[in-house]
Image 1 (spheres, rainbow, N blue to C red):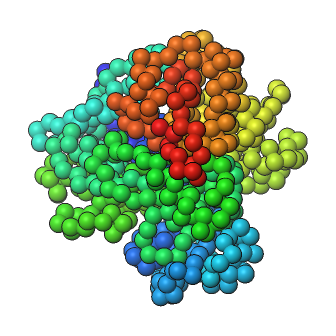
Image 2 (cartoon, rainbow, N blue to C red):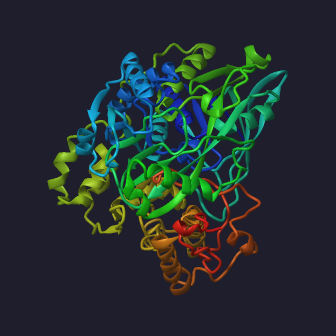
Image 3 (cartoon, rainbow, N blue to C red):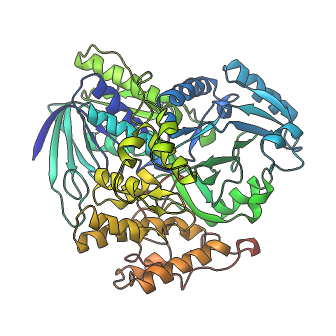
Length: 598
């Protein structure tokens, strides 16, 4: 099977989806291919921060300026994905006055609004800040939903004629007569919406140009093409708490270091992070001490974190890049700027451009620059419009007021639905059928769930990313069976297909909890096991690799999970929906137990 298109975009993260949208809006025929779900890679494993640029105002002012400019753009075009929480850079007594001054001056030099607050003023903003902080700098940081943003970009790309294929990894880059002419992909479950139990085929997609937007995986695509893309993956851990301990982004005002940020995200807070270079973006250790470090260090800023409930942890990999010969040894010193690698000029191999480095906040700018480059190569005379045209869901926010009355949703449930759906609320929520809440933790209604099933097919993990169902405190214990039921009743799929989809969802829900099995979360996991493995007999058919799973080991990539959570990724396989807790470490983390529960 083969297809012809103008541009193939490899990678369904923020940059790839942004490129697909930008090119499609300019009238270019685009096909995007992604090896997993949208946000499968780095995008789905971030901490959900919309940068003001303050974090780079001292160390990387060029990146800081890009951040504040794109911060303003995204607040406008992606308002239904953004919560403007504001941010504080907090100084503790042991942090230097000199660095505080440098941070303030750097923000002002980069046109980042910055206001100095006394300790008392900072605690008026965030009452749970530590009592011994000295002062703080207020900046316009925010929280952003990476899943919602990528789905909106991909949906708009499709509206403009693009083709988007998920679960379709690239297995080869096609080279003919010294020129890249396309890619070969394998559809894991058939082209189109994921259908469990149906094996897909291999497809050759020929194109005038290929864009390598795979982030930390860019080197692998380069290897297939026979060129060297020197990405330096750097892992970082994020830990998800069960409630929003703060409503403002809290940064530690000190030079580079681990465990220095708390991001309120939806119903949770996300603690981050570490910065450690790794050789392989899918094969690196996930260590319990990293989780402990998040809580121990960030409790110095927000003391209540010490006793708060942790619901899961996940790891992501940054796609850091620096030009050859730079020689930086510490990944924290590598620029967060982005680079376009034109392989025609760089490697005498026309037909492909790689985009590497950068940050989530600047994804749209990155997409604009590479789309300009591709259009120049193709002779397309069309301007970029992505900074001015709102994403689907952010076009008209009067709906957030009007439909509270129309749908009888004057409640937290109504507000949450409106926040997620934005201006799409009318088409999703207007139904004559009963619309009960399916996921109590995240206030997800049946109408939202069925809308997501209509888009995602049998991929319940995609449904989860679109709605946040199963991403709350219970981690799916009280709602995944309802999701599966709607997949059968509304989607019309047979029992075997629904079972396979549910098993896959449970595997993703489990793996991020392996590093949070102590105190209340261990009790929650045990309850989920009783409800689903015992009462519903979900553990009736254990996999052959049961013992390896129970130890948290796998021949596959190590589990990395939710950013919000903020993201999921492939990892250790779990039993068919079962949660094997017999060997889990139930020792209290604060008594020196293994935080990972491995």
